[in-house]
Image 1 (cartoon, helix red, strand yellow):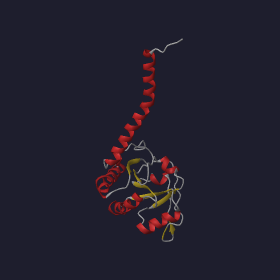
Image 2 (cartoon, one colour; image 1 turned 180 degrees about the vertical axis):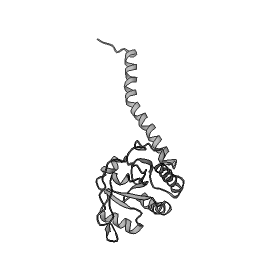
Image 3 (cartoon, one colour; image 1 turned 180 degrees about the horizontal axis):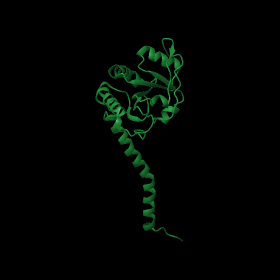
Image 4 (cartoon, helix red, strand yellow; image 1 turned 120 degrees about the horizontal axis):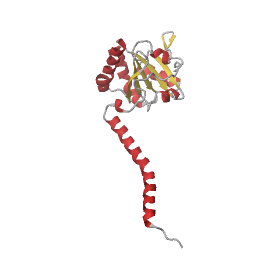
Length: 202
């Protein structure tokens, strides 16, 4: 007949509990960091491994049927982001309510800075995307599509909308998560564009 040794069993039980609890604690800590970054009004606090690195190699084909005059609005790929000029890349979708809220700010950004804005229409129907542009206006110099979401994964996109500032060498200089508001447009996005332009000029 064997008897359990409580002095051996207790540490073993504690070790098993620690292995179960540790991942949960790590998850909660990470969730709190992300929640703080989103609620603080400074989306740039969300981590991005791509800042300072070349924009991912991804090709965004044109949105079928979207024209300016007689010309199809072109899509884009990495090459168009390395022409020496600062560019803004905006991921959006017609079904995204925050994208509707943000859209006037993109038009205002274009008006105030003249920066080239490239759009990426994410997991959307072409007809719905065209209706969105027809209704709210077109701030985009180029507008590509990401029908299966692969490009967004490559770019590390968390959700719609997200906006990237690309320096003239094709590197990601800044990332804004969530809709651009009037406050973030004036206090964050425009200053980051000007900073990227100064860097590109040197």
